[in-house]
Image 1: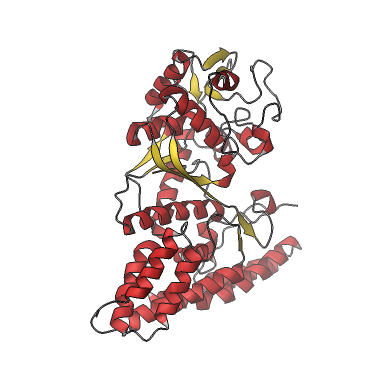
Image 2: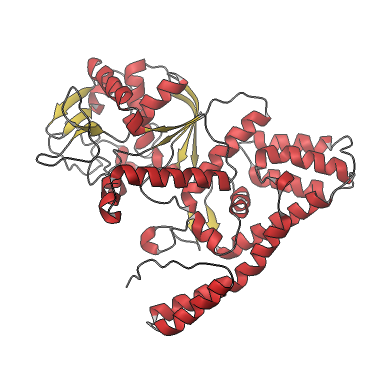
Length: 440
């Protein structure tokens, strides 16, 4: 199993974390069903360009280099800082770590070798700014391109053709040359010239290195269905032949916030730090994710997170309070739980089984034993839950939340002295406030 991880130039949003929790649920469910899982996740620390936001991942600035300029650090320092932050978030959400977090910069050799193999097969060509994959040539050889995509932009001629040297608008970069007269912080020698790998090639090269030529499961956000995953398939199968690159693709749906789009420009691209600053445990966020099916959009609101936190608290209270011998467990509930996770990872149904079990007439010890088995998939760490800590966090959060809203309104009205007074109130409650630059 391979999961497309983050581009480590900033903090992941709660939308990003939904995908990684979905990935974790798949790993846990497979293990629960007695499969042995070899799991790899990449960390993109070079080659992901800002043009991806507008539909052409071969244009724009490298996200790491851009962040380095903004934060006045080196690109390597940016990658290290945000990679470590991501691994910290992994622990907070109780995610099972992969056998390796595979970094693009540590696998340049493998990427160069794979590009060379693609070139030998006749599906790569060189132009002024890099080496590109020949989509039309790939199709002429009897292959299908773009079968995963649900967006029109993957279709021939639909993407805006920015680079006139490309044979086809759909062709994508395998290797990009460093701009003339400019030395990048991250660049390497290659048979074609000094530069850096394209965004897509890393996943093919690293998954093949660690997991072989064919994956069983590949996970990512639904935005990757448009170009990134079709490009992975094409460049991989161009080398391996018509053997399917992956048997099962799993794409997590987008997260809405207050019924609308989440994004930095909207000011609602919340992070784990935002969750914690309002007094919520990251595990409450994990519970919130469980309330929606991974294929469907789920709407995040602070009220919904609060409800998840209360449910999590109640479940923790029950587990902590159930005493006695484990007994015979609860076989019919265990069967129904298994059926739920086998049904395309139907976690809302699995949660329903959890609560029906909790209200059942089974002995407490039996209920506790079955529920702790379920938690091998749920990942809520119920065996070691700190119920009182969860309670205290929630009691504080409502008060702090109201103060934060009040302070933000004062700041926007430029009543900074009054806003500072509210800030002091928040800090007296044990929280630290760090401000982003005001917009507008």
